[in-house]
Length: 496
Image (cartoon, rainbow, N blue to C red; front, top):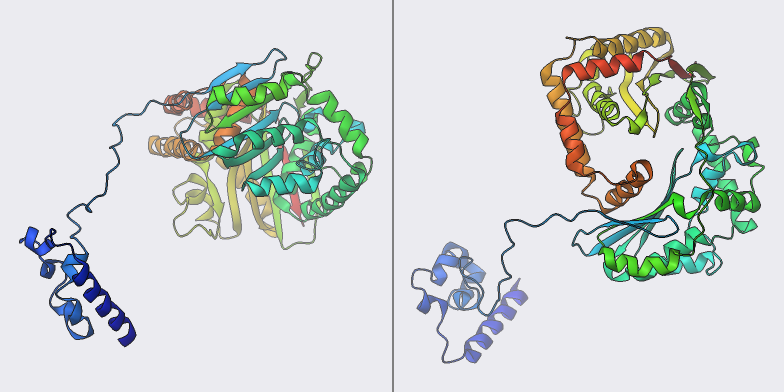
C-alpha cells in the first residue's frame, strides 16, 4: 500500500508540473462541482489524503462528457426490417438470404433428402453422411479443412434428419468468401476415403450401443419403426448389422442420386444478397439438375414395440398421428400450441424452482402422483405427417396406471370445455416467445430459411406464424386434438 501511495504521489506532482497554463481546473470552471463533490472528505483521509488537492483536476464528474470525445450519432427510432430474398439459378438451386447488419454471418446448404430416401442397400447412410461432413474432398485433405476453419475462427456443423440434411458454417462476415467456398467444396466434392469411413463407422457403432442404453432416444426410434409403414419407418440410427454394408462407394452413390441442384438450398443470415450471389453463383451454376423426384411414401399404421431392459425405471410413450404435417399449417401450429399447453417435465428440474409449474401435466400429474418421475407432451412434425403424444417414466409397478393417466390427459384436451381460456393464452404466449427467441440466433435463422424453402418453396414471415397462433381458439384446440386421437395409437416401452 505504501509503494502504491508513493507512485500516485509522484504522479500527482508530475501532473501539477505539466499542467498547461491556459487550462483551468474543474473546480475553477464548475464551482458547483468541485473535487470535494466527487470524492468525500471521509474518503480522502489516511493514506489517500495526498490526492485531495489534485483529484478533481484528473477525473471530471460523471455528469459531464469527457473533453475531446466525439459522441456517436443517435440510432433512428425505426429501422427497416431486412426481408428474405430468394434467387433461383437456371439449374433449379435456390439461394436465399436475410441481412442482419451484424459483424458475423452464417451460411448453410440444405438438401431435400434424409433417411426416408434410404432403401435396403443403404440403410444408415444418412447417419454416416452426417459423420463424414467436412472431411477430405477432391481439393482438400481433412487436416487442411480443419486448419482453414480454425484460421478464421469458424464454427461448422452437420445435421441429419428423416427428411433433410443440413451443413452450416458460422464465421466473421469478412471471411465469407473463403467460408462459402470451403462449405460448397465439402458438400459438392467429398471423396469418402476408406480410412475415414472406417473411422466413422467405428464411432457410429459406439453411438448405437449408447442409444440402446438411452431410453428416450430408443423410444423415439421405436415409435417410428412401429408407427409407420414405408419411408418414415426407416431407422435414422441403423443397427450394427445393417451398417456393415456401408462403404465409400455406397455413400458416393447415395450422394450422386440425391444431392442435385433442384433439391438444394443455399441459405444465409447476416449477408448482403447481391454479394452472396456474386460469390456463390460461379461455384454452383454447373451443379447438375436431377430427374423428377419420386416422393418416398409413408403410411401411418400404428403399432407397439417393447424393449426388455434390466432397470428400476420403465419408460413408456403413447403417440398418435398428426395428419397433414407442416403442409397442413393450421393443424401443425395448433399441435405445437397443444404441446406447450400440456407441458410437463421431471419431478426434479435442473432449471430451478417453478420451471414449467403452470402446465397441465405438472399441475394434474407430477404434483399428484409421486410414483411418476417424468411426464411430458412431445411432438415431431414432418412435411406430410407427424407424431404427438405423451412420454413418461415411472417404476415398473406403476406403468399401467401411468398409461391410463396419459390416455385420460389426452382425452381431456380433446373434450370441449376441459381446457380453460387462461391455459390457452399462456400456451400461445409460450409458443410465440419460443419462436422469437430462437430466431435471435443466426444459425437458427439460416436453418429456418433453408428448411422452409425446402418445405414450402418460400420463407413465410414470422408475423404470419404469430398471427396464426393468435387466431387459435378453444374450439380449434379440441377439434385438432380430436382429429389426432382418432388415428391408431402407437406405443413404445423400455424397461422391465
